Length: 323
Image (cartoon, rainbow, N blue to C red; front, side, top):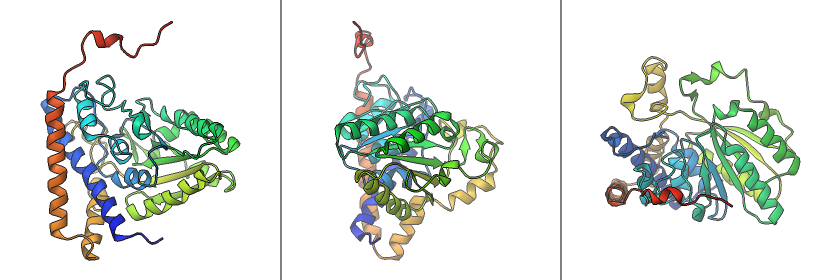
């Protein structure tokens, strides 16, 4: 598939932006001003950018606890994200949700769930909604290898195949569920790679190669939008930092440092940057301009978050349904 140089720079910029946002969160997290657990997606940026870049504003995504990249890639407001991490009213969840419960219906982000696998049935239901309404909207679900252990995935995929729903299941296999390696939880390949192709399109790809991600995303989004049913894409990747919090909070000993260093060499951002420079698509001046623009945007977001007010006692009674 031919991808223009302009699109390549756009994909790189979005990955770089998510990476720098995550790095700033990690650097400031121990200041204890962000009163929420955070789960960073450093090393996984190609997946969120590659897939969300093919979605329209009206399409849906359902995310999980490691969802900052999904939110930003879908068009979420950086100011609202950082305010939410500070539990302020300027946040996308008005300070009620924190990092693990981001939501912004204005850009088709229908919520993140802290329940492992919790977003899978929700995203499947959104696909059912699209089909019942006769719309062309696609539903995309992001979940990790820990969520792939949950029975709800099997139930949801079966239902999506049965009803031929426009749902794309994106498994971000970053090898670790908290401190448990994927090899300790799975026997062989995932069963859904063997589903009949007329019921479920399935593929396993390098989730750190942005061009490969973009290519498969284009294929499955078009497939879903044209009524050919669900897809299941496993993206092999790696979370460079720990399960939650900052690097200093990651327990020692459960991961081999050599394993981490090997995956750092597969960094989606750095490797794509190298390719773009070698192909004379990205210059040092363009890169410098990108870095300055992103840094300024992040500075503004953190400044706005500090100025945004905290929810009041009266706000406790807002958004509560009663009869």
